[in-house]
Image (cartoon, rainbow, N blue to C red):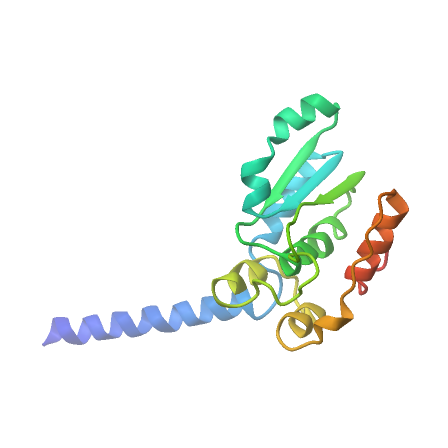
Length: 175
């Protein structure tokens, strides 16, 4: 009886402490991946950041690409990620950093870049929370109830066209 009573209280304490920890991490302040990602950027000091999901992870060898181009590369991937995660990385890691790489290349397929609701629910919410920095109203609005028609992609082969495309896709970021 005493062991059973103790086990119930230990279980209750574990549940309560887990809930408090979850709220501390995911409701206020910065996500737990931000410090790691920012440190990685500052340590690597790459000329270019390659940003994408598991397709990039499996498809491009950053060391070989660095050797071929003579530029330092940093490959940043989150399995199953799409535009919401990439936006948060650009906003909360790249723009927040004192170090700015010369280039950022986002690798995607199909409509992954232009659909703000894609891969934002279920198991994909956790990576989004982990890369968030406090209030992410725009992301949550677009991903969970905003109007996806507001997102637009402008495709161009020249570099100014890429800037226009990024401004269209991520309008809240001051470029």
